[in-house]
Image (cartoon, rainbow, N blue to C red; front, side, top):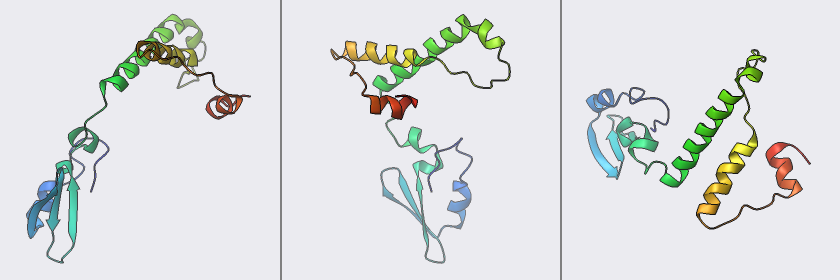
Amino acid sequence: CCNAGHFDVEVDVRGLASIAKEIKPARRNITGYLLDNGNRIYILAEGRLVNLAAGDGHPAEIMDMSFAIQALSARYLVQNRDKIAREPHKMLNDVPRSIDEEVARRKLAYWGCEIDVLTSEQRKYLYGEE
């Protein structure tokens, strides 16, 4: 069983442990529970959020780009709040892809690289345009 959702309340590990005939580690971050009927249940990361408890998390190289996109998107929304207010029916607001591109360009420049020019096929796939 793997919990990749909410909190550590979705998998009743204590309840499982109380009915298990045997509990033993199978490998790092995997615990096996042997039931009376011979079935085994394997629990990842003690039933906690597997990507946080058993993984290495997101590397800083990903997190800094995520936070940059969030900050620039928030700035865009504030700077364009009057336009957005005229569209109250929209539950989600697209921000310009130039924000993603700016973050990508800056990150690649930091690494000493340049961004590729997209082919028409790539643009069509990503943005639905020719």
